[in-house]
Length: 220
Image (cartoon, rainbow, N blue to C red):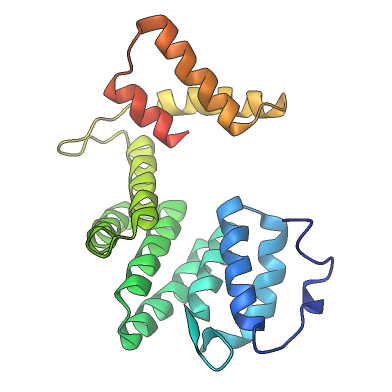
């Protein structure tokens, strides 16, 4: 990312590709949790929060700019700000008649709600994820369905709550593995290396992986 992004984001040419380029760059920044880029991108896009991000004359539509503002705000730690943008993006996506955009916006709203965790947020996040998961499955949006499942697993880990048909571990189990994960990263072990080590250790110990093991590995 550092090799692709110019030192000054404002130097990206303001041509017919600018809004769409910043929208896709925002998605990458949020996926990587690159906080150092999130706020500068937010500042660049904030003026256009009422518009849709497009390429050219609209031959590719990336959806409401407010959706990307919401994602960026979640990334730099302002879930209240994020939810304001995402509520707008959800309504705009409905007006556009785009089920994929509606589903993706619901996932991002759930992410912000789980980050904020005020009273009632977890319940609303679960409802949003369930709706988004259904649409994603119907439309063949496998990556979005997986994203919804991942957020649901994080919610289960944080709450220590059992869902019908699902397994869970108590929050302390996730915290312990999280600490181990961070210590290995500090030792310059890659995330994929951490997961491989985790699976290898489990297989060496028991010869098989339980459902709980798989849930924990999925959260990692």
